[in-house]
Length: 110
Length: 228
Image 1: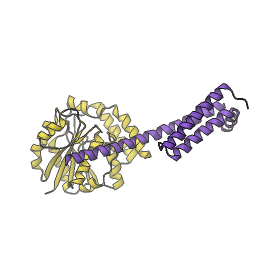
Image 2 (image 1 turned 180 degrees about the vertical axis):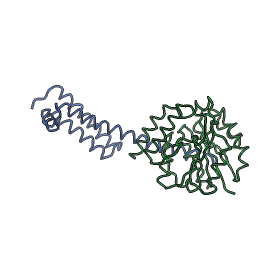
Image 3 (image 1 turned 180 degrees about the horizontal axis):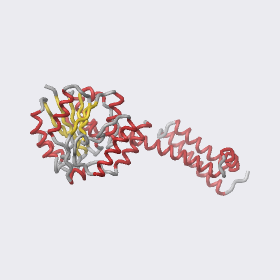
Image 4 (image 1 turned 90 degrees about the horizontal axis):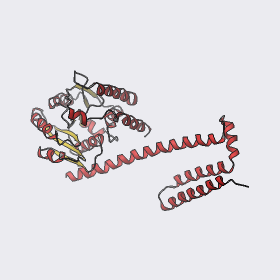
């Protein structure tokens, strides 16, 4: 199978991204669910880059013009959802931080 | 005698906290309860804590600023741990009148409500127009999100009895806590009542109060809370 230079560059990047995810999982920095999620994302990316014509078939099925547009729309949806989840996570951290500061404040009073 | 804690969340209020505490201390003996003043120093960079201590207030200090909601929660947690019978929150910027404490306490003492909200809109008050528009919008948002209609959802002048003190679970650190109270009222089916209060706005208190531009970030946080 013959790959274009841009495809090879993407594959190298994906190998790097997957290696980071596996290393972070081994360090205990991310849990199994997160590792499986990212492996799924990068697998989809690998398939889309290896068989770009398949994205056109999916596009036709969905009634969208081009395969590349399908990839962009799907990526945007995933990105927005991830940003939303991050915001919720940050809010939870803020609450926990305040709880710690509260306990310290009340302990210092006594 | 019943125990009342007057909770004053304060952030960099060194200019006025002394006079606010003095006015509260001189009025408090008229209330038929044993009263303690509690200042929640929310990571102030000035002498708020020192001045509050000199004015015989109990001072609980956050090491860093966490926001109005977090300060309220600290005050309520302190009330829980010291088994206070009543809590009344009071602004530390000189906006509120100590004389209005009586109206709030009266409703609590007669067991007419678990939560009493002092409303700026139940009598004529000199509220700047833009602030008024935002407060009315806040009331609408509180109603849409939490199904509770009040005339002053952002009032910092509120009273709670022991039932409310023990049941309240607030998670919002910043100004969204004002609206979050009403979610808690609905969740725990608490009785609430509004009483008219007076306010005075000075150039100082207007500069310290909730900025009109904060409203958008408060709205965003309330949307997130719906998804939690």
